[in-house]
Amino acid sequence: MDRVEVRTRFAPSPTGFLHIGGLRTALFEFLWAKKNNGKFILRIEDTDQARNVPGALENIVQTLTDFKLNPDEGFYWDGVVLEKGDRGPYLQSKRLGLYKKYAEDLVNRGNAYYCFCSQERLTALRSEQTAKKIPPKYDKLCLKLTKEEIQNKIKNNEPKVIRLNVPPNQQIRFTDLVHGQIEISTNDLDDQVLLKSDGFPTYHLAVVVDDYLMGVNYVIRGEEWIPSTPKHILIYSSFGWELPKFAHLPLLLSKSRKKLSKREGDVAVKDFLEQGYLPEALLNFVALLGWNPKTEQEKFTLDELIEEFSFEKLNKSGAVFDLEKLDWLNGVYIRELKIEELHLRLLPYLTETFTEFKKYPKEFLFKIIALEQGRLKKLSEIGERVRYFFSEPEFNPELLRWKKMNNEEIKQSLSDAKKIISNFEFQISKQEIEKKFLDELTGKDKGSMLWPLRIALTGLKASPGPFEIMEAFGVLPNGREIILSRIKKALSRFR
Image (tube, helix red, strand yellow):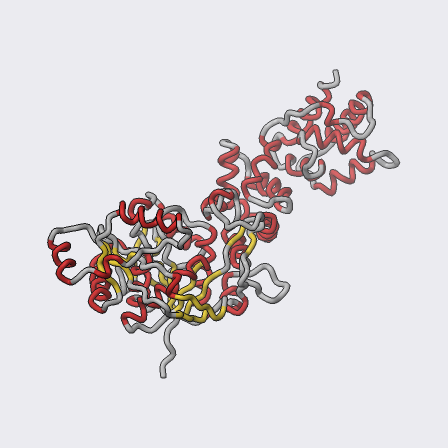
């Protein structure tokens, strides 16, 4: 017997840019498909037309490409959004005829029915149930209509929807690959609308029809969909279709242990990328949200994640989104980049901060980037960290004071540094600079010279040391002049 091909799908709605939770779902679906040599499908659920956001479809497709989660079927990015596969279209708004056909088939089977109730009646019914502290549900009024009454209403073009006919007093059981055995009574389910009056399906009908027709046999999604799964099982059963396997991922939580949402801050993947998080670091971090490799390893390539992923390693409890952990992990990835690669990734942030930085030689840029590589947590930090290399620093003269040095001692320290530097032959290495200074500082307090010198060069309390900074400036044709000019300016503040 041939092994059944594993087929997973990511089916986001274009109601906003792809968020972190969506990226995690797509990643786990991708990993499971690839681990089993299966197919990963990207389908777009755009039936809520009023909430669709311009550019969201393009953002979703391009973001998956940026993270190398390339679909085998459905939509993909090639400068524009394109579609591939023989089970499409993969945009739900182009499949309306299919949903109407299958919804009416459910009506004919007695598993769904036409509902003609006005919005006013539904609102009144909900208010009445709420007042009585009864869970709000449709009361099946239209299920009691005769065939003749239904035909007359349809003939008169009365607005209608199609509702799922949920049978009473039944227990629906299924085994979730993450949460284990789950049982829900049909008495707790509403007769959900399947097809709206405008001809568009709701999620419940569309997801089942599309998953069946596209051969999806693993449904991986957030645990907020667990209460809806029995409704989907009823629809599968009504058609006599084989059920897929279900896996519901743990919620993503903020540090306050509330469900991660836009109200808690930026959650769009685009926002994190623009802040300077590397795609490979962000993907690694997202993989660890609810998935435990059961080892001490924390840094994974995409191929390693494919090898290690399994449902048994997924947690049931919610995963806390720890921004400090993401910063740490991103810093690890930044430190491992070759300087040429890091330079390319920093270009957008350098361009944004310094319009004329491209006139500087690459050797100079490489040196200043290397100075900060070990300190960066995000690429976006580079501008403020290296600003002093491109413009003279402004600072309070008091910052030049090392411990209890008086003004005359500060001036003498800067003058001594100026004299030493005047005898340099640039380019000169950090080691050579350090030796010349330390020879002069034998038996003296090093801080009394190096602290005022570093402040004069950078204007910052925290920065690389003065030797590294002077080595970088020494690459420039006018490097010595820049250094001496800054020392003179610092001296002038005490006159």
